[in-house]
Image 1 (cartoon, helix red, strand yellow):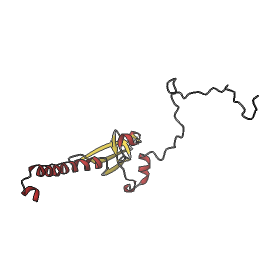
Image 2 (tube, one colour):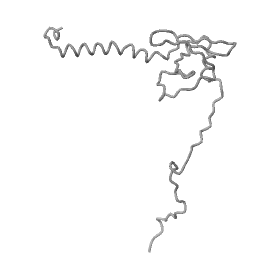
Image 3 (cartoon, one colour):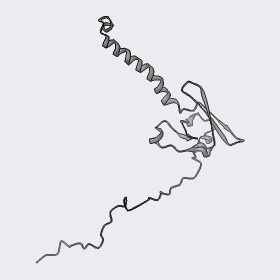
Image 4 (spheres, one colour):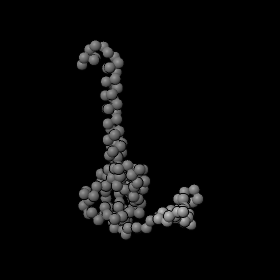
Length: 147
């Protein structure tokens, strides 16, 4: 490396700093993307519970036990795009193709329940109400000749 041979300490320090930033940030980025991925998912039919195993930062397995009622639908703004559902406050990424019985994926995601198509009522106050139009205004006819 010509930079090191010329004793240019600033260039060598910059290269060393960039190398260390990449070395340190790579595992953090991988963990940030993969921490939600479910490694194993078990169904306990007697208790009607599911237990999901995920990896922690230090590659230890963590088990989350939840019921179908503990699962809520995620919002992308809060959890990001790598989330299928939130179980007991933990964002999880489930892969439907990895289920041996896909009916359990439908149960967890609540696809087997009827869809509520009702629109939520808006809370309209004097501050956020749209302006009303005066309907008593008379419209002039342009075809009438004026004298």
